[in-house]
Structure formats: structure tokens, C-alpha cells
Image 1 (cartoon, helix red, strand yellow):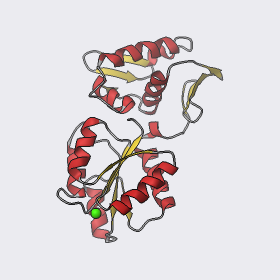
Image 2: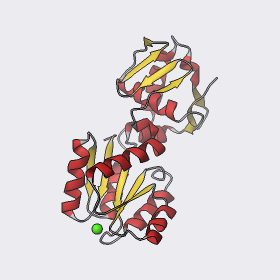
Image 3: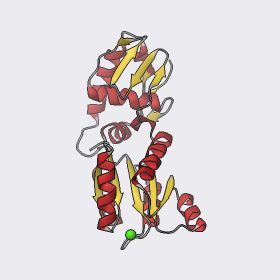
Length: 228
Ligand code: CA
């Protein structure tokens, strides 16, 4: 489920248009016609980003964003608010409660994709194709390749995602549940000790370059990527 963009919009014609645009640009999508449905979907798996319409039946888009921001598990989901309101005061209200960006209907597919890219780059660098490097160790998401001083470092796909996430979020401690949410996109169907298994494999893969010491265990909390 990791990689999906959640579209929360009650007008089906707009949902279809956004859905098509995103799929054409290589994104997976999940659609919800109400805030309540969105909350149910998010409970199952965290999206990479949420596009949330302001005017929804029942719980409003604004209220949904407030709820996401108030919950520890969902507070980091990048959010772009969709609205017909071009009013400056409304725009500020949206940003004020924690939307990362704001897009006014009608918008072009090109503008939508550009905004999504910009927000992901700022809020979720592990989801972009930018190359990251730490002390000679380089992760190239577009090529799906890890190298150390130009030599390929082999590892499995889960270890790759884990390393990429760590390298884009250094110096911060993450619990196993947070890592499951951020790296696997799902904390409900995968056991926490799965994280330990992949951490062990990742350390083994990094032994050759000496970066295994960067993967640090923080007792009774979780893991951190940091210079030893
Ligand atoms: Ca609407």
C-alpha cells in the first residue's frame, strides 16, 4: 500500500480527473468520498500524501486536516487542500491548521503534479527520486541502487527502503511502529519484530562499507541513523 496518494473529494467527476492524472504520472491512488471514509482508509494504511477537498459532506476537509494533525500517527502526512475558494483569508485558514499547500479549482493536471512534487520534496524526501549520500554511501532511488565509492552494495527491497528512509531522516529516533508506517506504509498487518529482522539484514549489507554502525539501536525506543 505504500506509495499511494489519498484523494478525498465528494464530486466524482473531479475525483476521476485527479485519479487519472495521478495514475498517468506513476502514482498509486486511493479515493474517499468523505472524511469518514478517508479516516477508515488511513487507519488501514498511511498514504504518502492526501489531497483533501475543503467542502465535504459531513465532516469538512478542514476538520479532517485538524484531526490528522492532532493524531501522532497521522500528523506527518503531507496534505494539499483542494478548494473552490480563491479567497486569501480561506487560504490562510487552510495553511494555519496545517495544510502544506493549497490548490484552487479549477486547476490544470500540470499544476497539480508540480504542487504534489514540491510538497513531497519538502515533507517526505524519501518519496522523491533525489540521490542521497552519507560519507561515501549513496542511495539512488530512481536507479534503485546503493553504492559505496561507486561499488554496488546489494540488499533486498525492504532494506533499500529502510536505508533510504533513514538517510533522508537522519538523527531522529523512530519506533518500530513508526518505521512500519513510514517504510512499509502499514502498521496493522506486519509484526513489529519484522523491523528487527530487516534492521539486522541492513546492518549486514552495510558491514563492507562500515556504515552498519550508523544504524543505531536506541534501547526501549527504536532505531536511529546517525554518525557513530
Ligand atoms: Ca466538495
